[in-house]
Length: 626
Ligand SMILES: Nc1ncnc2c1ncn2[C@@H]1O[C@H](COP(=O)(O)OP(=O)(O)OP(=O)(O)O)[C@@H](O)[C@H]1O
Ligand SMILES: [Mg+2]
Image 1 (cartoon, rainbow, N blue to C red):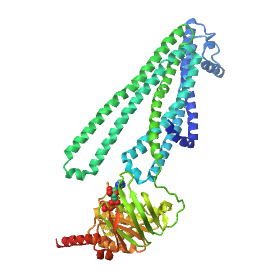
Image 2: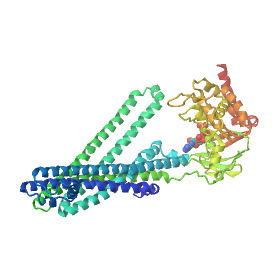
Image 3: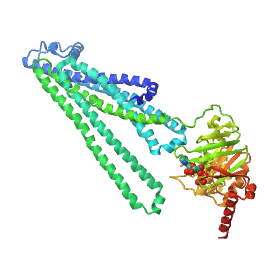
Image 4: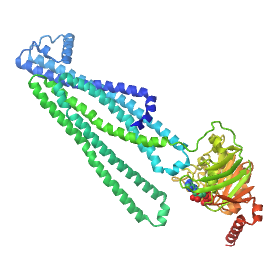
C-alpha cells in the first residue's frame, strides 16, 4: 500500500476537484435517500385512505397522513380552499389522486437531482483521475528518457511499455473509481443507515446481515477476475509480440519458408489465450448473480421481518417498501467494498512496479548545470572500460588526444572496441578507470546537454524514425531559422540529395512502416545528414560508410572534408580507404591500441595496418577486374 503514497502529490495538486467531488457525492446521496421516503409516504397514504374509506370517517383523515403528504395537504387547503371537509368518497379520491401525483413528481425531482449531482461527481473525480494518469505517464516517460543505456539493456521493451500503459491504467482505477466509490460508500451508508435505524433498529439489523457476506464474496470474485484477466492480458501481449515480430521479420520468414511453423506457433499461443479467456468468462459470469442473490436475500428478510412487525403495528406498510429500496441502494456500495479492495491491491502492485523504475537513478547524471560552449578537444588517458552486464573488457588502457579540428580515425577488427570509444565520448557510459576529457575537463564535469548538443553522431546501426525525410534530418536541430535550407544543405553534403529528389514527394517522403524503404546505403547517408544538420563541434562516424560502394565513399568523404575542416572528427571504420585522410589513425585490437600514426607512417612501419591496406587494395583490384 505504501507504494501508492507516490500519488499523494497529485492528489494534493488536484485537491479542489476532490473536494468538489465529495460535495457532489454528498448532494447526490441526499437526494437519493429522499426517494424511498416518497415511496413510503405514497404507500402509507394509500393505506390510510383505504382505512378512511372503509370506516367512512373522514374527519381525522388529515391527522393520519405522513409528514410530507400532510404538509402538501395543508398547502393545498390554503391554496385552493376546497379540502377542509372531505364529505364524499369522490372528494377523497380526488384528494388522494392529487397527493399521489405530487409525490410522484417529488420522487422524479429527487431522482433527477441525484442524477445531476452524480454527473458532476464523475466530472470531477473521474476527470481528476484522467489528469493524474496524464501527469503520471509524462513523469514516467520523462524519467525513462533520463535513464542510461545500461538500464535499457537490462529491461525489455515490453516491460517498459507495460508500466507506462497497463500499470498506469490500474493506478488510474484506484484514483478514479476506487476513490469515488469509497466516498460514496461512506456517505450513502451513513445516510441510509441513519434513515433505517430511525425507522426500526431490529429490522435494520436483520436486513444488514447479508451485506458483509456480499462484500466478502465480491472481493473473492473480483480477485479471481483480476488474476485471470491479468493472465489473459499477458497472453494478449505475447500474441501481439508474436504478430509484430512476424510482420517486421516477414522477409526473413518467407525466405526461410517458415510460414507453416509460424502459423502453428501462433495457433498454439492463440489457443492458450482462448482457454484463459474462457476461464475468465466463467468467473465474470458469477459477478452479477452473486450480487442479485444477496439482494434477493436481503429483500426477503425485509419483507418477512417487516411484515411481522407491520402486523404487530410497530411499523407501517410504507416502511417495508422503503426498506426494500434501501437494501437495493446499499447493495452496490457494499459490493463495491470488495471490488474496490481488489482494485486498490492491484493499483498498489502496479504503482510498486512503476516506482521501481521511477526510483532507478540514471547512472549518467548531469553534474554541471551551467552550459558552456564546447570547443572540441578530446583526450583519453589510461581509459579502460568493462561492460557492466557482460563483464567484457572492451577497452584496455587507451591513450590518445585529438585537438579541435583534427580528424582521428579508429580502425580495427570487429569487436576490437571501436564503437565503445564512440560510446564513451557521447557519455553513454562512463569509463571504468582512467579519464575521458573534453577541452581539458573531465567529461563528467561537462554539462551533459551541451556535450550531446556538440556531438553529431552517426551510429553504426542506423535508426531512422517513421517520419518524413526532412523531419529525420532536422531531428537534432533546435529551432532552425530556415529548415528547408538546412535540410538541403545537409543532404547535399551527405551525398543523398540526388536520391531524395528522385522521390515523388522529395523531402516529404515518409520513411518506415507506412512509407518508403530506403536502401542500406541511403539510410546511412540520411543518418549522416542528420548528424551534420545541427552544425556540431564534434563529429563521430561509426562505420557509417560500410554500406556504400568505394566510389560513393570517396564522394562523401570529399564532401565531408569541407565540413570536417574545423570540427573534431572521430572516424571509425574497417576500411583503410576511409581512414587514409585522417590526421591520426589508431589501430585497435582486443581493446588495445597496437599501432598509431598517420597513413604514411603506418604504411612505412609495415605492420598490421600495412597488411590490412594491401589486402584491401587487392580486393578492390579484384572487384575492378571482374
Ligand atoms: N552493450 C554491450 N554490452 C556488453 N558488451 C558489449 C556491448 N557492446 C559491445 N560489447 C562488447 O564489447 C566488445 C567491443 O565491442 P565494440 O562494439 O566496441 O566493437 P567494434 O570494434 O565496434 O566492433 P564492430 O566493428 O563489429 O562494430 C565486444 O567484445 C562486444 O561483445
Ligand atoms: Mg562497432
